[in-house]
Image (tube, rainbow, N blue to C red; front, top):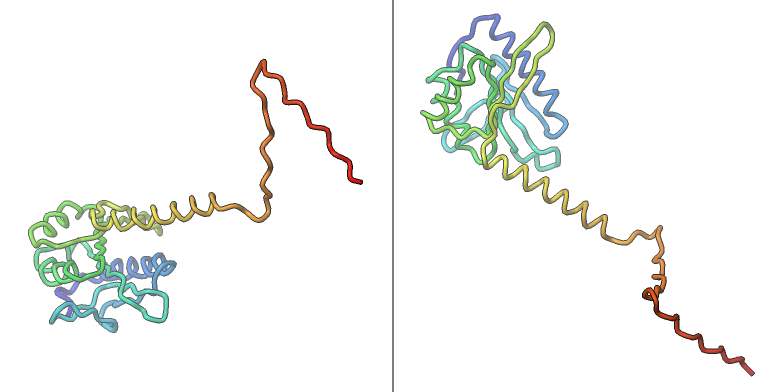
Length: 195
């Protein structure tokens, strides 16, 4: 599926710059492939439709299993046509769909996602101040939250189990006998000498 609209040059440069920033940011956890401008190289097949998301996230292991898709929009491309042609398909995929929009387009993006029944795992906003681009998580779906919470609870359970298991460096210390207050200690039996 080809791009829906031709952005003004300035917006296209901003769009491509944000994609490259996200590629660098997300590569800690995924292999990240990008589709910028006319370079449509990494497709994602969703049913009969083949789409070229801005970023395609795959596992870092040999299998390179698809783990998510990312779309970056500009003020010009947060519209009904884009939502129907791209977001709706990406939202139906079995992997999380992450949407990044300019900070002034959050409400429009939410409305379009709702109208087109788009399942967005995470909605992010971005804004640029000078050379700095800031990303802010605006919304995370309950499915994404439960997946994150599940991973965190599994990690904390592993930590608890590791903390409970005895360490080889520490030996068990025998308990010291104590007698209740006012009680006389038991008399010791004389040890028998060996012949």
